[in-house]
Amino acid sequence: MSESPSPTERPVIISDDTRRSRRIPPGQSETKKWPVLHYGTVPRVDPAAWKFRIRGLAKRPWQCGWETFRSLPWIDVKCDIHCVTRWSRLNNTFSGPSTRTLMEMAGGAAPAAKFVLIHCAQGFTTNLPLADFLGDDCLFAIEHDGKPLEPDHGFPVRLVIPRLYFWKSAKWVKGIELIEEDVAGFWEQNGYHMRGDPWAEERYS
Image (tube, rainbow, N blue to C red):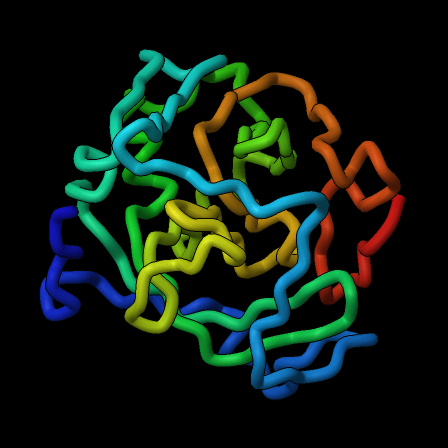
């Protein structure tokens, strides 16, 4: 497996929410641990067989394997994360290619694209407005706090969208689909909010 890019060569992005005078959203409690929450079993993904695909309303559909994905430029994002189950973990550092970098590989979004559907192992999906997906602090994380992600936390790749509840930061990502109309993902079909802003307590539909 190839080495990750040197931290000295990576841009560091500070998520805006870390600059708030009160960093814990309403109804949340801080934890120092990183709780593990998921539905069903933990996928065991073989990086040698893993593929990342961009499809739908991209200017040019694109795909790659693990080594190509890892070789893309990385960023470090320093952020807080907030789970809909009411815990918040402050001062995380996630590292990997930015969502903007991946969109550049596909030539950007077609004008009609307004939303993104994230596709993950075991058929899991989640939906996002394209504007949230392309935030400057949003990335496809390969490492957390300088260490590779554990399978429980989404190895080999998880999406990280700091401004939204953490179920939107989908684990075990396999690709994205750019779409014109918003489509509910797995948890959204089961009663969770379509956007999930923790500061507005958008927990459930």
